[in-house]
Image 1: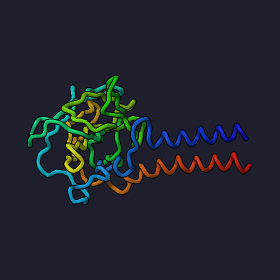
Image 2: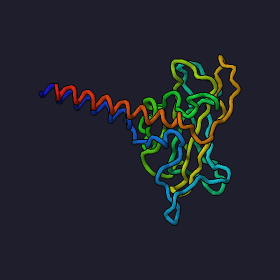
Image 3: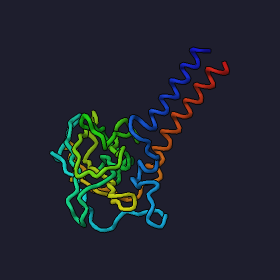
Image 4: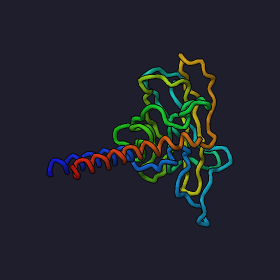
Length: 223
């Protein structure tokens, strides 16, 4: 019985890791639409993205990538509207092909500098495929790194939601295109609401791991 319980606990740990990784938990729908859940305005109603131009910018040290290549990402406040710092961030690399089935799924993995105390990596679809914040502080800029997957995915771009405070945030802050030299796809910025199929990918991946956990638990305890 002891061995069975050990295996069960191990599987449960795998499940918890699969949905939260080593960063904070990201609600499934937020992974897809990047709309911060729980952000309220001064009256306690749902807060919405600002409509004026974003005071936050994303720069990259190269606009092309190959398999497993690494790109430096720099996110900063440029002072527009009097905002020279930010307090929160959710950032992913997405496919710049709006007809792609997985256009709303993050690509590649992120790496942070040693000693980073504001940002954390998160896992939406794959391990460390998202960057978010783990603390609230006045941040003027941050540098971190994105690693391309083992196989190129066509043209890409960085998409982020960046918050000045809970009720003041900008969605769809984007970078230049990151081009795949081997692709003939014309890049486009895809920021429309996610498709039902794309939103379902995250939900189904979590449900699949949960179903496997229950199956193994029952197998070890009933037979």
